[in-house]
Image (cartoon, rainbow over all chains, first blue to last red; front, side, top):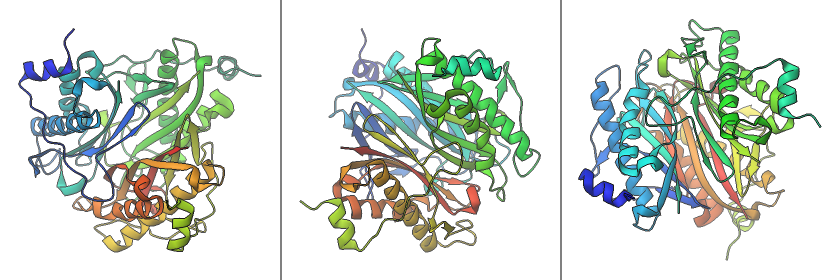
Length: 154
Length: 154
Length: 154
């Protein structure tokens, strides 16, 4: 059976260094077998890669890439929660995803597939998750997407 | 003691066929005794019944009906998660509800009562739940309401 | 080791009387060791203290105070869930925070620090939590902030 670490290698994906907490909250909390991961933004090496709103300056393609970056950061946090061993992440439970958008933009699901598809590519069947995707008038740092997650550990 | 299946009969409610997953996410994930159900829209037989925004083209009455439809779809997914036996749903834990609305609309709680009242009608005391109701500038498919839920199974 | 009840005394904080349910939902639901608390508004003695939107009529300072008031109400509900003994609240797991704001407001994290800082002041290390902070076009009663939480009980 293919492991998640093997899948990451096959995909040529190197998970980012998980961002540290910047205030009185932390990147994740473990409670029982669940890991609650803080809302992640499309940051790469500490830099916001996709700013602005869908339906305005951000295309669905760029929004999808933003969601994928949020997903990579979520996986990096999940791995950190699992003590650095991604194979101890038993499954993704739920994504709650916010898309910064105009009032007439209704393709949030297409955008968030950028994260959902990544999760299944990396975690296999264990990456299939419950999901909510909604709009927001604006997000921290003017990010185009923010996604929070619950994972389950072995 | 009245069971949920009996209450559904008494109310003349037939739960819809739960919608299947349309992407790399799934309608629900079970973790321990909890069921995380994906955000549900006011769909009936695959058709969106209430589109638009509260405070604009959608009345509070129509919004309330939209929330009720989301609630029926949540219950249908909970029943599916319980292997088809709604009486194995021990309780509703939480609803997180998003109302597509204008910036001056503040009656989200009234709208979401459409789902909350349904839950108590169907599940009895076990239908009383924690809840958050907030506005969103827009939702998938231009839906007026989206609601996600956590249930607990026996 | 300092207890939470001692910290509350040291800080001179008296938690409010928890608001009762006003509809078919309840202020909190306990499932296993988790307490899911309903979205709390910046209410004091039943009166909304901070109305309006960030980026418009509400300053970041007033928004931060609104988040602190939401936090006090969350703690009051957590204490009630713990049978009145705040020292039975083992930790805060997650805050999901909504800031009513204009489309160009991006300082949601600063605003929500009003709640996050309170949690660490009151609960100590056990107050460090996972968090998501997002914008909303409007919130119930025209509140500036709404925050929901998951706590863990002893």
